[in-house]
Length: 235
Image 1: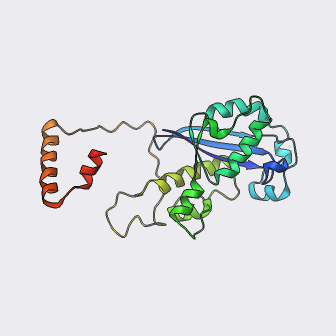
Image 2: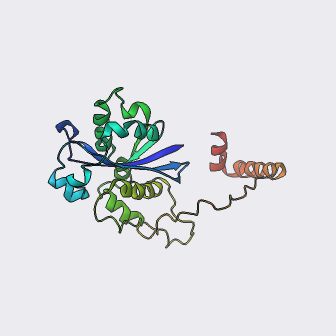
Image 3: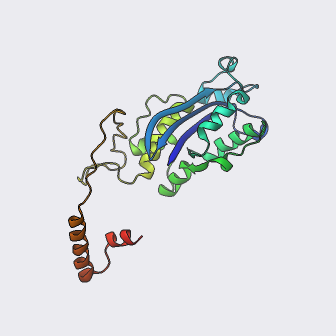
């Protein structure tokens, strides 16, 4: 499965009030592994960035003055995300802005018509009810290093969210069997392996080993009832 972890920065909080996207950051996952591919762009919003928004992301009107317009990057951005499952923290916010930007162009595109959408905020709220579930809180909970995050930035936040998402949805976060290790907050986060590393050898069971395994399952199920492994095979 191809997933795109995505974040945006904007001129304000409400696209219906004419606020615009000023930065897009995306990182690509394939089968839950970072591929190294990313998409990042700053955008001239053709309007003023609110002072309150600048205190959040630090992106000034002067910095954006010579950046491309959304209509100039819309096609390449759409091609990067098309057909993927988008992973977004508080997805309604970012998708609302994306749809508002696409609605200004021809042909009009609606994000959900071309992409799946996963909201990590909704996942976190379900998994950790009654707790803070903003990105900083999740980084602390799952041991993801966000020390370079003094201000919000779309690409940096997408990279951090990718780590959080994999831990949030991956169940076990460590291989240690020590009951005192791997607890929430104690993890060192995801350690990425070198992209050019040799592929691990896949050793499959022989026909004789499969037969012996099935016989053993039969003995166990006869004595104790259906096993979890048996249920998985039947499924």
